[in-house]
Amino acid sequence: MAGPLSGFRVLEMVGLGPAPFCGMMLADMGAEVLRIARPGFGDDGSWRFDLLARGRETLRLDLRDPSAVEAVLAMVENADALIEGFRPGVMEKRGLGPDTCLARNPRLVYGRMTGWGQTGPLAHTAGHDLNYIALTGVLNAIGRAGERPAVPLNLIGDFGGGGMLLAVGVLAALLETSRSGKGQVVDAAMTDGAALLSTMMHGFRASGMWNDQRENNLLDGAAHFYDVYTCADNRYLAVAPIEPAFYRELMQRCGMPQEEFEPQMDRRQWPDFRRRLADLFATRTRDDWCELLEGTDACVAPVLDWAEAPLHPHNQARNTFIDSGGVTQPAPAPRFSRTASEQPAPPTAPGDLLADTLAEWGVPDTLVQQLQTERTNHGH
Image 1: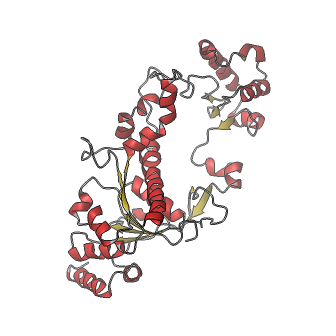
Image 2: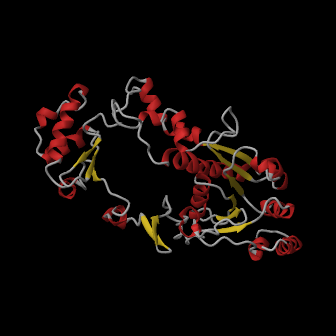
Image 3: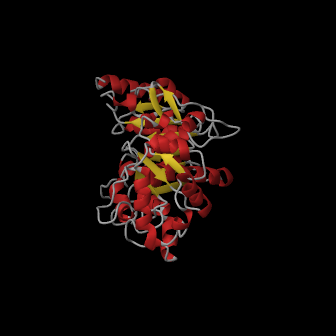
């Protein structure tokens, strides 16, 4: 694979969501990532649409077998990084904890992805994205006043505050290893990452610019110039001209009386201004408004659904979405001017014993043969 991480090798212990997303990002940027999965993984055919597995092989090994554990440790010796997303202690029980792996390869970056982190009173309990963003104060800030907090998919905890945080941590550790020659453990917790994403709001709150009431702040739907409006066809516009010059452009293009809307930051008038804008946007279809406003500094964009987004001219011009294996999906990001990433290959069927792959990763022939014999004896 081409890309800025070409030449780097990463072992990925297959888990759910955030850790595979990290593995996908590293593979998208050119790293050779080998996924290690449990026996039977993917037998239901679900791998065909597991886009988080794109661009890399999946090797199934039974880690209850000491020979399989030894094979992974042999591969660790030839890896730059290992990433895993299990509860604290699971990898240690398998004989693949960080102390064991770093003893085999002192330069290894050992990335750990959990919800609550490796330490703390909740570290060993189950949870999901919604729990993690709830504990950090993020969930309470999202939604309309007087209603329950809105459920913002699982993008904040799992992917932004989780998988992407782990990718940043692994890359930072790899840079440090290139100087020190020493590996280390990266503890990426979704609670930490979700909290980190809300740093700006904590600054706003400390300065008195933000409070704990939903729909009562600059960026949570309270402001008439930062909200979503319903159009005549029951589709939506995202309207966000925060800066005064952009706000004036919106008013001018919409034919709204400038002098009446001039006190943009007068919070007492926001509810009335919103009602007037809502009435205005309800008079035309979404696409009619886009014809007037999109591509200007009025900061207006159509709210597109999953099917519409890949067809938008801007996304098409940038190839923001690609087709790989007949499935439309987001392209690798960010873009690199000199070491551009390749289009990722579609997910591949998991393999039970990829002898060539094991050999390429430095597993001794005798151990490969032993694994083959044990697999045959167990009737696999």
